[in-house]
Structures are given as C-alpha cells and as structure tokens.
Amino acid sequence: MQTASRTLDAREIQKWDDEADVVVVGLGCAGACAAIEAVDAGAEVLVLERAGGGGGTSAMSGGVIYLGGGTPVQEKCGFDDSPDEMFEYLMAACGPGPDEAKLRLFCERSVEHYHWLVDQGVPFKAKFYPEPGMEPPTDDGLIFSGSEDAWPFDRIARPAPRGHKAQAEGAAGGFLMQRLLAAVDRVGARVRANVRASALVVEPDGRVVGVAASEQRERRAFRARCGVVLTAGGFVRDREMLRRYAPALLACNMPLGCDGDDGCGIRMGMAAGADAVRMEAASISLPLYPPKRLMKGILVNRHGQRFLNEDAYYGRSGEFALLRQEGRVHLIIDDATYVRNHAGMEISAVGESVEELEREIGLPEASLQQTVELYNRNARRGSDPVFHKSPDYLTPLEHPPYGAIDCSTERAIYAVFTLGGLRTRTSGEVLTPDGDPIPGLYAAGRTTSGLAAQGYSSGLSLADASFFGRAAGRAAAGA
Ligand SMILES: Cc1cc2nc3c(=O)[nH]c(=O)nc-3n(C[C@H](O)[C@H](O)[C@H](O)COP(=O)(O)OP(=O)(O)OC[C@H]3O[C@@H](n4cnc5c(N)ncnc54)[C@H](O)[C@@H]3O)c2cc1C
Image (tube, rainbow, N blue to C red; front, side):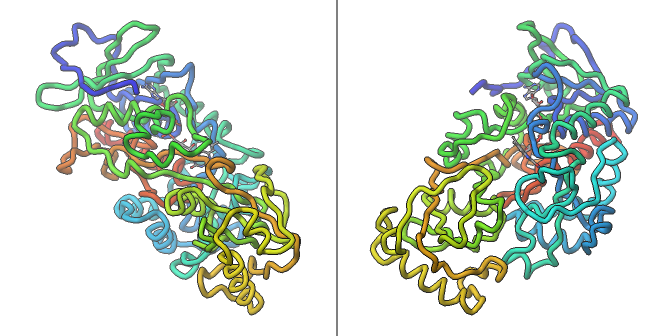
C-alpha cells in the first residue's frame, strides 16, 4: 500500500509548479465529467493523470450506463419508466442503506443526464437487446442490467430496462472514454499525464488548496484556487486495503480495475480528515449467464440448499454466493436445461441420478435430493413458493444425466470492484465523520461511496461516476 497518510502543510510549499481554479485528480469517467462541467461553470481546469493518458478503468469497461425515468431510448424501445419507479427499484436493490438523497437526485435528473451525455458526443442506439447480462455483442443500446424483472424487485417497481450502452459493438467503455476525452479537450481543460498525485496540500485552517505529486520522479505541487476534485478510482488493486476493509474480495480471481485502482484517492481524502464509508461493499459478478437459459438450473450451497431465485442479476448471485455462502456454491442442471456458459464455466461433475451427483460433489446425504424433489414438485405447477423464480425459468430437473458447475471462488469467475469510498454530499463535497464538508475538497466515482451501498446493478458505476462527477466539477468551480 502506497500511503498518503498525511497531508502537506501549504506553508511548506516553496513554489507552485502549476495552478488552476480546479485541479482534478484522475481522468477516468468521473474526472472527465468533472472537468467538462467545471470549465462550463467558468473555471480554469487542470487535470492530473498518473497514466500516459486518460481512460482509467472506465475505458476497460462495458460502457453500460444506468439511466432511466423515461429516456428517449426507453421510449423508442417501448418501455414505460418514471423517476419514481426507478427510485423504488434502486432503493430496494442498492441496499442495505443506500444514500437516499443521491438516489433521489439521480433518478429525477436521469433523463437530463442522458441528454448531457449525448451532447458530449456519446450516442445510444434505440434498440433493445433481449439477452440480459454482459454488454451486448452488438451496438444495441438498451438491456436489463439488474434484477428489475426478478423477484422481489418486480413486485416493488414496474420493471424497465435501464442499462444504456454507448453505441459501439461489444464492450463500449473505450468508445465512451474516447468521446468524453475529446469533450475534455474541446472545452479546453488542461491535462498533465504521467503525474501521480500523492497528497493534498492543506492550509492550517483545514482548507484544501492544492495537490502534491510526482512527475518523472520529480516532486511537484499544483495549486487549486477554488477546489480539488478526487476522481482517482477505487482500491480493488490494492491487496493491503482489501485485507483491511474488504477481505472477502481477496478470494476473488478477477479484480476489475486498472493499476490506478490502488485506493490512493481515498487515502488522500482520509488523510485530510474525510470519512470513508461502506468500504466493505463491492460489485461481485458471478457470470452464470449469458445465456440466461442456464438459470433454469438451481444454485445450491454446501448444504445442498437453494439460497436465491436464480434468475436474479448475476451480481446479486455473486454477492449472495460470496458473502452469504462463503463462495461455496454449485449450479445444478439436467440434460434438458444445459447450455454452454458464455464465460467458459464448465460442468465439473456429472451423475446419472441426483443422488449420484450429490455424492460426486460431496453434499450431505439426501440434501440435494430433497431440494430437487421440492423444486421439481413446484416447478411442475409453474410455481416457486420458496424463492419466486419467474415461470420463464421454471422447469423440473428430471432429464439425466445431471450436471454441476462448480461456482466456488477457486473454480469460477468472480469479477469484482470496490464500491466503498469517501463520504460525499450530492454536490460532491467531501465530508468528515461529523458530517462537515472539508473546504476545497470534492470527489466522485469509485473514490467515493456512490449510488450502490452494496447491492449493484450493471451500469451504476459509470452512472454515478458521470453524474456526480459533473456535480463535483460544478461545485468545485464555485457554481
Ligand atoms: C471489464 C470491466 C467492465 C466493466 N463494465 C462496466 C459497465 O459496463 N458499466 C459500469 O457502470 N461499470 C463497469 N465497470 C466498472 C467501471 O468501469 C468503474 O467502476 C468506473 O469506470 C470507475 O470510474 P472512475 O472514473 O471512478 O475511475 P477510473 O475510470 O478508473 O479513473 C480513475 C483515473 O484516476 C487515475 N489515477 C489513479 N490514481 C491516481 C493518482 N494518484 N494520481 C493521478 N491519477 C490517478 C487512474 O489512472 C485513472 O485514469 C467495468 C469494469 C471493468 C474492468
């Protein structure tokens, strides 16, 4: 862990190497949106980026942005949505204990945010892609990217797809960032690449007035006349921080993040007295689908028991499997339901009977047999009174041979990134544990705790990075 456990006293700075009204640390999605809005609010902006250029994890992403409440894409694809339905879903799905003020504002302004993204040169094709899960291989612009149409959420809010993918085939994060970086350039924000921020510069009264950094091994100091915005990503690539704050993630084999996700932005904020919240939270994807047809199988824990409706978003299955079942889970299917998993998760055990499969994978005697017997009995009637899986995915498992896909952390893909970080207001102002704003300090994206307190739906990270990045840029500019 590279520490940023202290701040630098402004009185120690002999000379500033550069200055601007607003200094943004990190040029991913949050940093780009902060920079664009700060310039728009009349500020001179300097962006510091530790890599050779902007992009960050945002450029590696699928480019799916969670938007709704009646966007033009939703309307053209024939889906009814409203800010209230979106809010009800997110309040239920992002918990426990999501930030209600952030969710409310985000839902109310989601359509406006859609138009802002389009104005920055990020197009979305008004075509619905029916297979949920990962970003579509096509350039289609709309998918179900969470558990909106699965129990219990389908009873809480009217289901609507809200995953909006920037219009490019397959993973669209590179395209999204190309367009946002072009907008940063167009508005005239200055970018200094290969500059690694290491500490905040603070006046004796606690006001943040600049950033200490290194550039080609030289020490640098950058003055921020109005404010500093920390948008330096999360901490999934820092094992020491994971050990301290989110140890369950250490078992996961696919950290979703660039080198910059080392928690530096969070530690810089904490050193200046910021509160860090929900540091254990993470997006935990267990990509059991696509194809979603595989969800006709059942997920069982080490006691041979089901633990959720399998048609839920795979981020919910991953979260439940890792955090509630210690990552010891199998997907059970039969010959009629089996289909090849797109992420390459293979059958690991086969049995001519459920009893044989149960023995093969080492489950307690009769446990899986009872589970399958009960599941089949109800599935024949088209119901799932225990976990309420949709009838679309309810089929009795009765066609041998039976198979199991080992979804343990040792064998399956657990793709994770952190969701915890600095506590901020909707304006991006960074707060102390007492809830007071730290003068001159703002943050957004994975450096903060954003829309998803724990429960995640795909697209929420880029959504809050872009939406609250904009807010932080405006606030730092004094708008
Ligand atoms: C394969 C993959 C697919 C994904 N798909 C999606 C998706 O479809 N939708 C979605 O919402 N999320 C997705 N995610 C997650 C999402 O990409 C990230 O959570 C999000 O991009 C974070 O944005 P950010 O602006 O906070 O951070 P980043 O985009 O990582 O930007 C942070 C920037 O700060 C820089 N930086 C770090 N430290 C310093 C420092 N000390 N000094 C200067 N600069 C620094 C970094 O180099 C980086 O450029 C995906 C992630 C991956 C890896």
